[in-house]
Length: 187
Length: 186
View 1 (cartoon, rainbow over the protein chains, first blue to last red):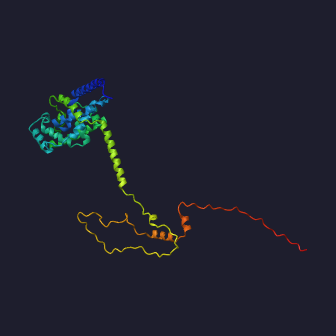
View 2 (cartoon, rainbow over the protein chains, first blue to last red):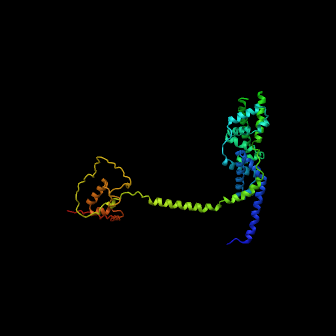
View 3 (spheres, chains in turn red, orange):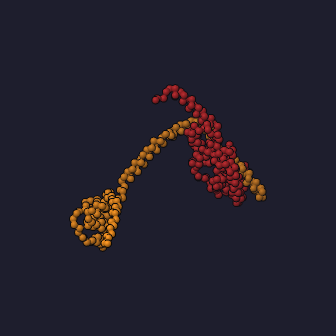
């Protein structure tokens, strides 16, 4: 039984709907997906590649799109896994180097906002976050993505929302202690 | 700097740093790049789902063939057949033979020969029969002796499957008691 012309004509709108769906999804969620990937990879090109791979996976599973209620959570979960697979741990600065650089900036009179914008502070925070236990680190990192609600983070990590909030609280507490210790050495 | 001020500074710094942590923007035109690349890349590496069915079937078939040949080539451990070794019973008059002790060659010295390069493993003189006949064990020799000496009827009765003669018991017959008549002498 061959493929009739009518069948082809019927299939064209279906394909077009799928492409339209992809286009609207990319336009609405591309930056969000990119940021989730960036929060893990901390590298622009790697984050772009990971975001692309995330949408490739979404495209392959486009049949499931209609049945998904928490779209952001679902997307974040895919992006998170893709990014974790691609992560290459190669920090530019060691913890001591970054802490020393931040201490020097602070001694020079930089405010908290100014310090936060510095590359050295970003590197220090990255190293401190990396030193956290995994169950605390993952919710904290995802919560730094601006668009992620608590429900999105919980859905992405497949944990209850209450547990996720507790973990983020503990992670911030631990991080604060570590940061205080890193900055308090010699000022 | 006092402790309170330092803690306040650390809090402020941490909040600001975490806020900036994932604040990143992709390059301009990122969405267009995705729209162009995603369908193409998805089709390039897409494996149809039905590919797994013939692949799994082929793997299962190969496994079955492998298992079949592996079990076929493994020689089944067979017990040495005594019946084949025992000659047919003859009707010759029973001859009392003395049991000679089984020959046990005394091994005085074990010599291990080094294998020469290129030499076949286990190379030795070819045997006429395979597997080679082993000397009879004590039980086998006793059985042979029994077969040679026992009368034919006994052997036949001991054959497996031989019908057992039906034991017929004749009905019990009690002859009438004969009482001698008393003689009157008067």
